Figure 1 (spheres, rainbow, N blue to C red):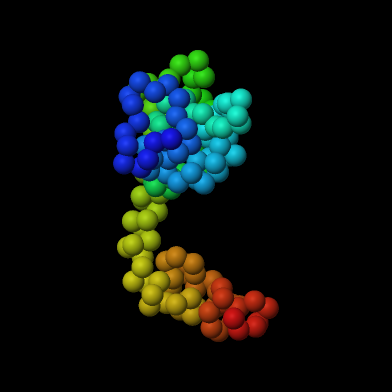
Figure 2: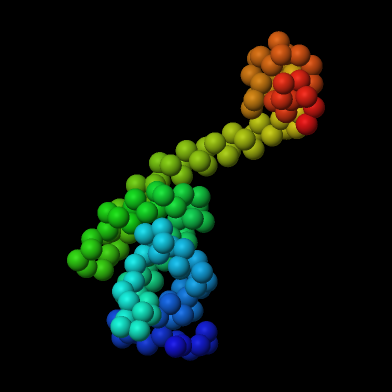
Length: 159
């Protein structure tokens, strides 16, 4: 088994879980989790040890980057399921997957920009049924429910 400081030889077709963890920078426990979720797979040796195909490194990198931009694991799994099983995915495959998420990311960026722009109004309102709240109380609709932070009250009981 390779130590963290040892490089995995480039011609290794299969990696142990420790080698995959060292090379990908992902904890062994996370790799086991990804495998339980069906995001990556391994074969078992006669001694019941996991062996991962070297191409799993790219899948793990894709998972980590996708998570970092906020893609849920279920969607990541759906995307990975479209990759070819008979060959190592190439740059065209990865480009197709990331392009499919551009609209989602653009929408998320737009939503965050609106939130940023409306933040001052939100802090000033505090959901206290003011005349306007750009985020949660448009046109002061909550004023009909009574005074105070109506969204935080449950059946008239203060939180």
